[in-house]
Amino acid sequence: MSTPLSDQQEIEIMEKIAGLLLGREQGTLSEADARELQHWLDQQSEDHRAFYDDMTTSPVLETSLRTMQQVDEVAALDDVWNRIGVNVDAKIVPAKRVWMRWAAAAAIASVVVISSAIIILHKQKKTLETPMAARYSSDVLPGGDKAVLELADGSQIVLDSASNGVLAVQGNASVLKKDDGTIAYTAAGNAASQEITYNKISTPRGGQFKLVLPDGTQVWLNAASSLRYPAVFTGNQRTVTLTGEAYFEVAPDASKQFYVNVPRGEKTPLNVQVLGTSFNIQAYPDEPAHSATLETGKIRVITNDNSVVLAPGQQAQAAANGQFKVVNADLDEVLAWKAGIFYLQDASIQEIMRQVSRWYDVDVKYEGNITQQFIGKIPRNTNLSDVLTILESTGYVHFELKGKDLIVRP
Figure (spheres, rainbow, N blue to C red):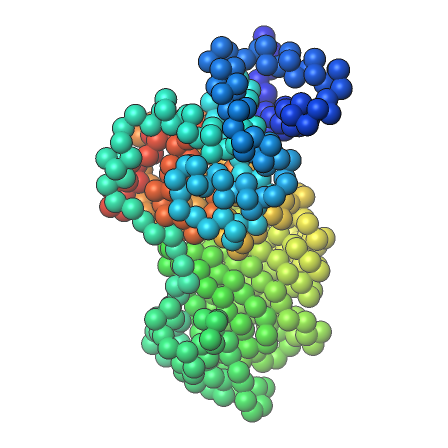
């Protein structure tokens, strides 16, 4: 009995076949390649061969084949979304590929090379028997720039509806909402003599926000996250406290080291000592592993007596007991949320739904067990129904949306 192919192996086969098909259309195939392609075609079912023959007459064949070769990516994405009826401006998506895993992928790989959209349409004929309107009795808009600023006296300002300009004065620091919506601090006077006052920015589910700290450090907060920080940094340290997920670009200051503290409930706290850098921290309470991922520079990740210094491209994954596992990270995957993308790389439905729940502010309920994993990239600026439609196209999962309750079924 042959060993089942992994998702990545299936993808590699599809890419190889795409290249062979493109070569045949361009008349550049060698005899050996032509035999390999014909052998693969002979293994497909009669229905799939017929579907392939029909699709190869399409005038968009070569463009679609080139999609798999990462040529004219924006046009290819436009084609995908238009064909599945998703109203998306694909030009904002910096994706190199748009893939979805589907049932018996090797058996219908010929569909893949025509385009992701055609695959989806082909699968929908078999799997989406219940009308979409009946299953999605409501829809949810994507998240956006939403946050609440809590000042030192406990008063709160809803940032997404606040006017531009000075929002508050904290000691000798002014809190500004800039024209681009960013919150920033400007300090006046002698910071060392000021009483330390703390502010906190919190994003709800369905929110994200960008903040410029008093030292010029830029912070992007993901949904359901918070950052507590002083209105003015004093002394020889700059320390902030994070829950959830954030990306940092730390302003260099050799005289004041930058620290990010991450309380983790009953788990060992996670601390990051910054040595001038850009990095991402993910520490959601509902995620099994918390991580710090370095993009540039150098950071030291600390839990109790354990510590590790990361090089660019490395990720420290912290267990509940404070032990580290250092791995090479896929930075495109880690930073996809900041680029406005759901990045699925061998992702379980549970992993995907945790992201969906935070971004669309819905409560997920499972009816049945789904063990398949998914590969793909989906823009985060799409309505929830569009995301569900794309996921359903795999044939592995089905959804029903009732208000804020999202039911997930095999």
